[in-house]
Each structure stands twice: as structure tokens, then as C-alpha cells.
Image (cartoon, rainbow, N blue to C red):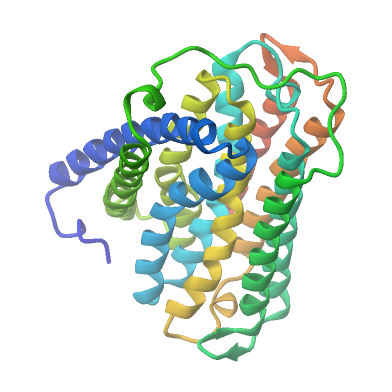
Length: 344
């Protein structure tokens, strides 16, 4: 149960607004620190997007799903992660609308982002297969989620190796532009830069937990079920770090980092299902969810596939400065939410 469940409504609303503001500020700073770290240590945007931005912005999901799993709420835990997968891809649509120059998929020339998107689809497909066929409890989790954990580790290894030695490159495309802005690298030493990054990550973890738990209390008072609530309301609230970091990265001209943040976060979120299974006291967690979770995961696969197709095609026309694939992703997500509402 949310710690805000028994508090007055105005306190819960105030906590939600303050936490949202704190997460937004921390996420924006994190993107600037990540950009500085990339240049200071010579780390590629794609790997940095997966490991630093993806991992850190997954902290609220880890806090919320861990709490839900320990409390025996499998539907909330799993559907938060699967719903967040789709929601976070939709964040790229917001980024495309923010730049309003051309299709975002036309401005990301790094093939590693394609790899991240496809690996995310594979992980979700494996999760949905486990839900469909059932799982067997083994060593504190399910055999299927043990396999997903191993696959997640291999996926991260693949991304890291591809960054060091890409098998192919896009020809005739300019790199992501860089926009002059305040540079933390000029003002902070390496130790200070890493310390500031750690503080931003801690703020996202703590305030992200406050954000999602206060949002849980607000949503529960509407009478919505745990499945729909987890896939929509909690997923949106825990996606605020991704929204702020991606928009900040886009404003910096770091389009590869922005896309890699989203696809990297999604890799981490599916990997977290294994931790949920370990924390859940009632056996294999995939056995506790069903059709709602499968549909939520399929929506995530669909919106990711649309952007992967746009990244491959790279000639996506723009309407009013926004890529047509962005319109399609937004319509698919909204239609998916309507469908999930009927299944709640």
C-alpha cells in the first residue's frame, strides 16, 4: 500500500507536484553531466545513453516495482515495467515535437541505436512468451525470468562491444549536432563531475519513489484497477526522468544520446522483471499476470518497431517539422491506452 494512502488529499497532491519538479530538474542536469562525461572520458553517446542515462532513469521503476513485488502486488509491478516500455518510446515523440526541424529518426546516424531497439523487442517478446506458456519456480525466481536475466546481460554486452567496434556505419549522414550551452566540464573537476552525477541519480531515485507512490495513492482514489494503474499512471510518473533527460539531450543536439537513453532504459526495465521475481513472495511472478500484460507488451513492441523502421529507412518525411513515424507512434500509444482501459 502507498505510504500516502492515509494522508489528506492535499498533502498527496503537493508531494506529487514537488517530486515531479525535483525529478525534472535532476533529469535535466543528468543529461548535461552525461554529455560532459562523454567528452571528458571519451565514451560514446550510445553506450553512455544505455549505461548511465538508461540505468539511472530506471531507478524510480526499480524502487516502485520492488516495493510492489515485496507487497505481493504482481500486477502493479509487472505492468508498470511493460507499460513503461511503451510510454518511454512515446517520449521520443515528445522529443521530435520539441525540435520541430525534421524527423528525429533522420537525425540519429548511429546504428547502435537500431541494435538497442531490436534487443528491447526481443526481451519483451521473451517476457510475453513466458507469460503465455507459464513459468516454473526455481531458486527464488522463475526459470523463464532467469533466462531473461541472462539475455539482458548478453544484450548489454552486445551494445558495449558494438560501440567499441561497429560492424557498419551510416554513409553520407552528418553526426548529431552540438549546441553551445553551459558546460559542466569547464567548471567541475572529474571528481566533482562524477559526484554531481551521483547526486542527480540519488535525487531521481528518492524523488522518483515519492512521485510514483503519491501518484499511486491519487490513482487508487479514482477506483482504477492495479493493472491499468500500473501500466498507465505509474508508468507515466516514473517516466518523468526519461522525459526531462531526453528533452535536455535533444536541446544539446545529442540525438543519439536521447534515443539511446530511451532504448537503454527499456532494456533495463525488462531486466528488472527478474528482480521483481526475486522479491515477489508468491512464486514465479509471470504466472500472476495474463492478457492485460501481454497486450501492454505488444503495444511496446509495436511503437518500438515503428521507430526502428524509421531509423532504418532514414527518409521519413516531416509534417509541420514532426516525423510521420512520430504521429504513428503517438496514435498507436493512445489507441493502446484505450484498449487497455477496456481490459482493466
